[in-house]
Amino acid sequence: MAEVVKNEEYTIEITGMTHEGQGVGRVNNFTVFIDGALVGEKVRIKVIKINKNYGVGKLLEILTPSSQRTTPFCAHYKRCGGCGIQHMNYQAQLQFKTNTVKDNIRRLGKLEDVVIHDTIGMENAMNYRNKAQYPVGQVKGNTLIGFYATRSHDIIDITSCGIQSSVSDKVRQVCKDFIIKNNIEIYDEEKGTGLIRHIMTRVGYKTGEVMVVVVINKDDLPRKQQLVKELTSAIPEIRSILLNINKKKTNVILGDRNVKLYGEEVITDYIGRYKFNISPLSFFQVNPVQTEVLYSKALEYAGLTGKETVFDLYCGIGTISLFLSEKAKKVYGVEVVEEAIDDARENARINGVENIEFMVGEAERVIPEVYKSGVTADVVVVDPPRKGCDEVLLETLVDMQPQRIVYVSCNPSTLARDLKYLEEKGYKAVEVQPVDMFPQTAHVETVVLIERK
Image (tube, rainbow, N blue to C red; front, side, top):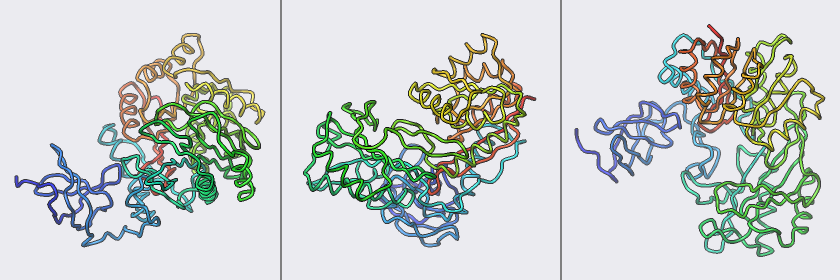
């Protein structure tokens, strides 16, 4: 095999895509991954990294563009770590996500006999996010508020973002002007010193209510009432302004203490007909339009008649639980984060839902105990984190033998692994529906109907 040389330039054909959205080509039969390249393109690249089994190339020039290529909407696209596939037209993005799910389920899950539908997309795939988290930094005396560059903690100063609400852009600008004008100290991530760390916004999609959270490294913010005045004057929709105290030297954005500066401690929003109170620490899906699509599909797959006991595992603040409660006899929600369960109970209360019981703990510990006590589920809904379900939990579900399992996943590879396990233990994945919760990114959410054989 001819050697591939670092820093050399090559012309190659792009023959595939990784699940992260990188183009894949070969240089002298050696695999190279290239950000920003699409299948079918002929490109000129520079090899910038060589590992044992693959290399990484930098895209220098597109010699033959793909028909799926489109002009990125963001000037920071090449540097920002946010929207990695915006150079792909939207129909191509949806096809890419469908292919990612199919490839994982067939290659990793070894499942052939399963219906995999096309990804459900959005009518408008822009400005869909209801939450923004802006890191604040300083370089050579310049204040930067924006997003991190790809694979780094270098902050790119971004004035507007095509997938965020325009209200978040306004909040960012008011906060930046305030920091500069009042010479407010900025947090230094390496030293762990300074004051302002992050600005976070949450926007109610249906209510229009806005929350602003200023994350600081001390107990107080100088001239805070001036900031309140400037924010509320510029953005009348603001219902809540909070300081979040985070003194830990950590990458975790929020600390666990909030101090109210203005308005309420929560804002409200709706998914379907259900109202939710959202606090700074609440887990709430960032794309409310597609959340409704996803949860409606999960409810459809659950196939409830009003007689069933349902377990909703990794239930968060009870969003899916409330949807399930409409057609279930009883719903048990389980979640490891205590604050989320407090929110879930409150959300059930404000919606007048009484056939739900919420429990705090790891699903893999709580469910075996509940099962031993004699409570079994007819239908189980799981919505685990990226690492998928714990094997102890899957074992318990297999022992319990619910008629149906509805699996909501944000990671097609751990989904495929868990489907393979269930397939070997007497269950069958019947139908798979990918939903585009995160347009312009390589992420895809999937809901699967699994039935007992």
